[in-house]
Every structure is written in structure tokens, then in C-alpha cells.
Length: 239
Image (cartoon, rainbow, N blue to C red; front, side, top):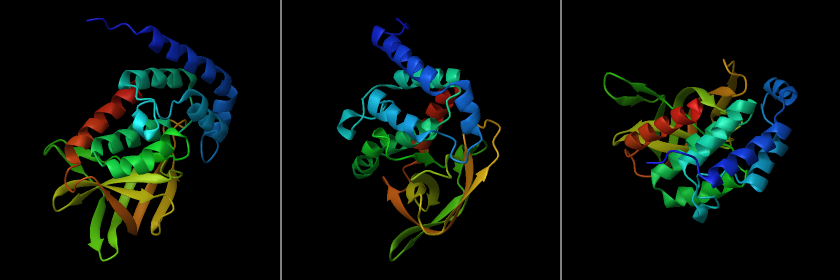
């Protein structure tokens, strides 16, 4: 088996490296780390429009490039090399993977094209895993009302949670771990920026108080998918 990168993958690396050399110099990294949002919007949109990086792992039918995780890993390596400041891990990796794993075509068609176009910053309020039971420790509590689902609870250290327009929140329903979508400006959602060990990636604490939410995929069907998304996130972070 040949583990060498293909010529196309090497060209992707060169293109991304040249782009980041120009848009993520050390002076800009230092400046952006100190800002509340932590990224440059113009660079973010150029990454989407000129390079297609935000939709790299998104299928073509949803406006993406339809590439694989190997290509996403190459981009992550180059971003690490340049200390790139931006919500790439939360949006292009975690949230995108969670939507793809949900098998919810309506949700995918609603949000993936906007992610690929650089119009939507998204994130996943990834919970911790309880090693003793191999289940997920979810902080949000869902309830179903006449108007629809609402969430209560707190999620800590959510990547880009202070600015995401879409927050994907795992929560425990009677059927098991389920995934919910919450709009960034939803009523009852409070967001607090937290100090982070790595200031190139911003984190926030999210507090939900009867916050309207939309169920994604089947109720109780998120556990195995969430484990896969967690693994992908760890690999991307290592890259």
C-alpha cells in the first residue's frame, strides 16, 4: 500500500502554505489572538471563495469539494505550521462532520452550503466521555413543548461558541443521546468567552435557558456518530 501523498495533495499543500504565508504572518497572529473574535473575516471568506477550504470535506451536492479527510488533515497541518487564527476546527471539522454523520438530509442542505461558502460559522458543543460506562456526559437537558424542543443547562469550553451562528448540542433524550441545533442568537442562550491555553482558538461557556432547538437526525441516534466525530477532531487537532 502506497502512503505517499498524490501530486494533487502536494499541490493542495503548496497552495495552502503560500496562502497562509501571506495571510497569517506572525504579526497578524499576535494581533488576532488579542481580539475578541480571534480571526480575520476577509481571510476567512477568501479561504472559502478562492481555495474552497471550508467546504473541503463537504460533498459536492451541498456546495463543497467532496474531498476526503486526508486533504483536511493536510490543511490542518499547514494551519498549525502558520499558527492560523480562525474557527476552522469547529466549523470545517467538528460541525461539518457532525452534520454529515447525522444522515439528516434536510439539516445538511440547510447548513452545509453556508459553511462551504464561508457564510456560517458553526461549532459542536462536544461533551466528555465517561470511561466507566462508555457513554457521553452531556450538559444540556432537552424538553419538548407545544412550540418544539428547548434546552437547559451549560456547556463549557465550546470552540468558537461566542461567535458561532450555529451550535450543535448533544443532549440526552429518553431514546438516548440526540443532537440539536441552536441558532447563535437564540433566546435564552448566554455566551461567555473563556481564557484558553491556546489563544489561537477561542472557547466559550454556553448557558441554555429554555433555548429553542431543532432536533437533527433520529432521536437517540447520535452516540456512535459522536464517537466518530470525536476521533476525527482528535486527528485534525494532532495534524
